[in-house]
Amino acid sequence: MSDRDTSNPPTEPTAKKILMLVTTGPEEPDKTYAPFYIAALMAAMEIDTTMYFLMHAPELLRKGAAEKVPLKKGGTLQQFVDMAVENGVKFLACAESCRDLCEIPPEELMDGVKLVGSATMADLALDADTVISF
Amino acid sequence: MARLEGCEFPEDRAYFIERTQWIWVKVDGDRVTIGATDPAQTRAGRILYLRIKPVGTVRERGKPVATVESGKWAGPIVAPVAGTIVEVNPEVEKNPTLLNTDPYGRGWIVRMTPSVPAELATLLPIDAALVRFREIIERDHIRCTRGST
Image 1 (cartoon, each protein chain N blue to C red):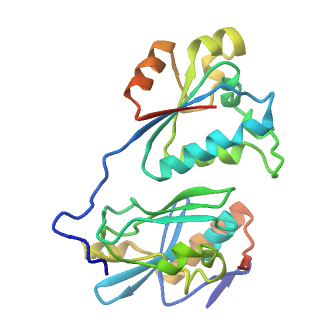
Image 2 (tube, rainbow over the protein chains, first blue to last red):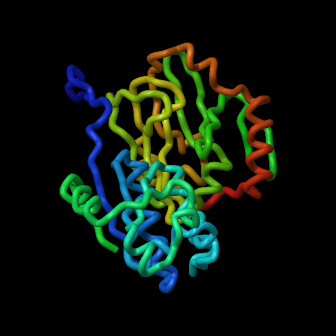
């Protein structure tokens, strides 16, 4: 047993917020899985974790796309996307990137992805405790 | 000891099986000991890091008591019942591969005092757990192996 002061025991921690910016898409498969893995881990640590996909990264969120991204360690990106979802990571996609760069209609994004504008990213960045960029 | 596809399940435990959480629970008086099951450690692969919440932490049912990281899997180990962590396993914190090699023995993770004893009745006894594990093992094509330290 710990001899710590138990008069004020640790209870539900105040959730820290992390915003992760992801810019790489399936054109560089080796760079795709780490953001999902780290986001999944942070969410498991009860950090309020949001991934914001911009530039070519929204391609990873197109329905069926992740299972077509092979990983050197074996398997596909899909298992890491599923892990992040399961652990409660929130996915946001840049509306401008989806429309102008990736040409993804909203209905072709995987379930649970929210389309937002750049102003939302600014708000989230200011509100987060830390912003991580990949 | 019950077995499915090389996975072992001690008969003196209860089990908490929800989504990706496959946990064993051993009731001992007013305390419960909690750990990862054989299919859980197999799915994760060789555990590299294990972070356990400190003694005294109060948890609701379903909230993490530990975080596991293996390089191919990262996720929580959740409290199968609400309660307070009264003991953590310092040996498995230092050597997390014990989760792989001895998940039901030296690989135990925390001991808790349940705050809602009625929740213990929601845990699955071995027979009901084996039905669920058979479905999971077939669905995910799991065949258990024990890693080595």
